[in-house]
Length: 507
Image: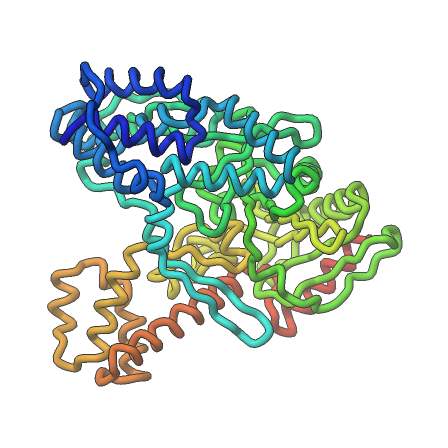
């Protein structure tokens, strides 16, 4: 491979897509020459038109990794880290990125600036667009309600070699976690991902410093993470509700929500306060009001209980302070509420009740959704009473966080391969099931599912029919998981208990 030629191709790409200025290109060229171990520039012509027409940097990334391997520029297995470093070199410096963001926001509008930032992070390969596009996504209509389901193939699975390397690496406290602002430009290593090409947008929520960045393996369009600049743990409070509504003033075209602050019902990172948002209409937003909740003191607000699978209260109005006041009243009542007839116990040796709050600005109104959550366990449900029941763990056993609770299920990549095996079983009665279990150990988790599908549909389906039956099974499983998370069930006992709780709030 001609290393000097690759440098010119990268400079050309960055000039077209990453706002690399002519003066800076001289500097960047020398940086790349040093890292590629090149001592003279390329004399020939590059195919400038082909480079400028690239919509994604994938082909150039592959060349960088190939070069790193051929020339032993990095340790074996660190080619991805090297590619990230090079794309960081080609990108705007963080402050220049922020300046450009604000310039676009002023000249056009904030959404145009967000569009630019999102596209920039695709063009510099921080957002893995090609990988995201491989995700298997579909929607399931269930009467007046619907859920969205995604088998997420974009997050790379770690190999045993990766795990061993991370285990052998010395422990380091820098950065403290994957969300800290100190990750800006971080080289990666020691089990932590590289962040040379990440760029952020600082913002202020209720007078405090936060910042927005995009998820590299987004679950939906413009999947944003909103992060407290201070490394402090997840904690739901009145301030959370105020912060979420404050965010809507900054970026009114995005929704924003916080995972709950407890295990099982929260997200995967509880050590650093952060929210998730973006430009995607999640299924819960389309759910109708089941009934209006009576209230005497906040006449300008509409407070309703939603016709949704889990237990959701929606507060709508123009007055943010009143919405925060109502949300805090509901939250304080819920986190101290017990009703043992429906297994609600707010605290034992630790706190169990909390909420998952989500905010969105629509039709001139602030809307705050509170999903009531409880993470208590018992002998019958060791993973959680209001969590996915064990019979559904073959599909989803991780925490049911913010995104799933709103109706978008993120399912593990292993399901694609496993469902192909199940399709073969349902479409070929000579397929050796026992041999499959023997050679694919992880298929055993689907044994009950396979038996139910065979009992219902036999083993002589077409591949299309088999896929349809599996999809319907997954749809029903996801819906049932959401119902499992409801603290107040949709049956008569649950609705009676719900009315009892709402009466206790005294709005």
